[in-house]
Length: 540
View 1 (cartoon, rainbow, N blue to C red):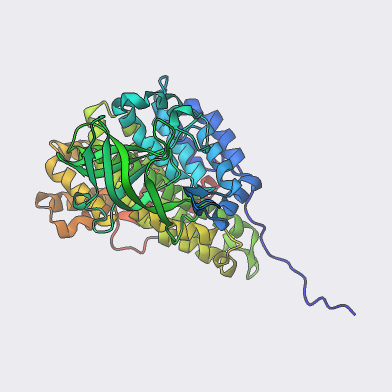
View 2 (view 1 turned 180 degrees about the vertical axis):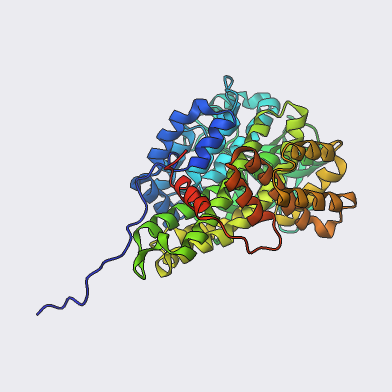
């Protein structure tokens, strides 16, 4: 007897073996335009390698096999170690080999290295996001350590600038590569780090002894952490190594790993310090200032990471829509679906333009104008991009329908991953308060905005009207308007870049879609065609 009940057909194959860089016209153009054209060939190679089925499988494996806390060994001795699936280590090797953790800090770093690194970060985010956490923290901590690392740890600088990933348990100076984590948040405080209760008392040898806890201790397997604690002179920042210079384990106790919604591949922990040894970075009482120096870079990475996840979601949806047939047509040819996908692509065009303008500002931060631009638009971009990510990936799920909701698809993992970047390094309200702080307290910032936006004045009436409306709000900015102001600033920043660099029909379509509060505008067929071709890398 033949028990076959049906034949499987009209089921699209998953997206694999694509070049993540060459398939993204907006990304290629932004890299070339903003000063990293010298990295285009390597980015194409990285994009090809990361887009393979093998790399994507590593991302899946690292998340379905989360890290495991090893608190004790078989004899009952404390281990305070974390065990990872081999996929995690292979992904970390790739990130370090591509210098996503330190490209900008090389002695011979080229102009545009922030731009090149931003592109590499976005490409890796499309494969696996959890591994970006240790990379981001190491990247942000490195300039501080270059200046303030105690002499006893100066041998760490060589592995800190290495392109090697070394997970072995050993003092940092003996390793081929090191990673740096951070320990800021306590149970009672969250973003209010001034309420931290961890104490630091100075010892006779110049080090400090830390007693207290951290509620979120990111990447506990890092070779050292930057930790906030209350010293005699106020909240201060300390270098707390995993292994002491004599080879002994530091007294940092891992209590448990966090059971998180997403970011499953990455270990986040709770810890206690039992007279843990730490070394002061800078001066006592400078802890907040040290955080702010690092915070801008980690916040920028949050925006880059969310953008990379959104880009992958659109790629998956587009690949499905080109294969799936419904009601006699390919899904991509159905008018309503074509409009949805075109609008998603248009959202990413604006984000790409702004993020890489921001990368150029970070690269040129020795210029006062560029430093101020980066200071203002970094929290605005983190707010705008990260907030857009959750509904964006949900829309991509709808393109696939039921199979997009099932774990065989990449999209559930991308969806679970999206909220972390909105929360980490300051949630939405913190970003808005930071934007208001810059707008009201940084000299010349409103003049800077006026000069910047004046360059595109008259090109689009929606942009001009939105800028006038924001100017009205900024005369007497109210904290309760913080989200509205920040979102409008983010959109104007992206819109100004679109008006400068996108084709006029695409730039005007972006301004209508994002800045026309009346809504209801339709994308022309030509704009839809251009956007969908650009989103698959077939023009440009």
